[in-house]
Length: 78
Image (cartoon, rainbow, N blue to C red; front, side, top):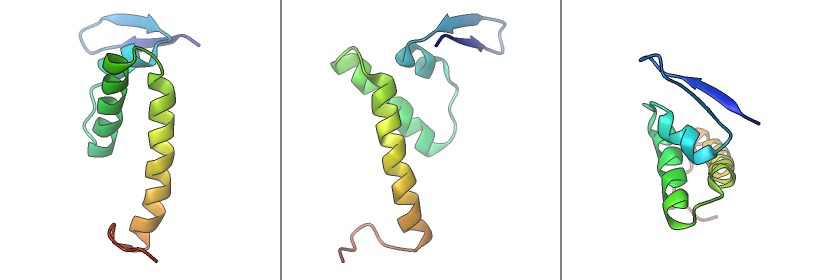
């Protein structure tokens, strides 16, 4: 599905390519920046699959959030 992206300079871009969309985002949140970096890496290494990689990483972050909320340290193994 095509997305219309409009920036603060008045430029509009229509694309269905995840890499293009991620490049145009002005991201501030650290976790979101990681997702953008993942997409850029996927695009440069493989040239495809950026949306899938971002969705996959998003699921990892969603699952990790539960452990963080329960104060489980990243080095804890039970």
